[in-house]
Length: 103
Image (cartoon, rainbow, N blue to C red):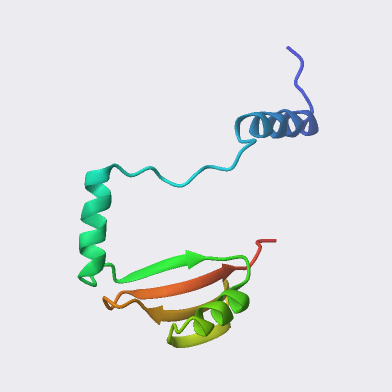
């Protein structure tokens, strides 16, 4: 059996990835009981830190601040991108994060 050149393997791998992962994955599905437990814990300030990702951290920061959200940290550059911090009414720490593209 003749071996295929590396470029051919890479093209086949790309085609396989394109075929299997054409659509991005959706959000995780949570049953009603689990969702209720998460809401209960969140309402007690049990979450610790929750990370929310966004395409534009500064724009989201301005929009949330205009709606009355008080931020503990304004958007700042980090090695992984940019983020800002605030707390929800239950005391959970929320980080609004814009990830820097890899590469």
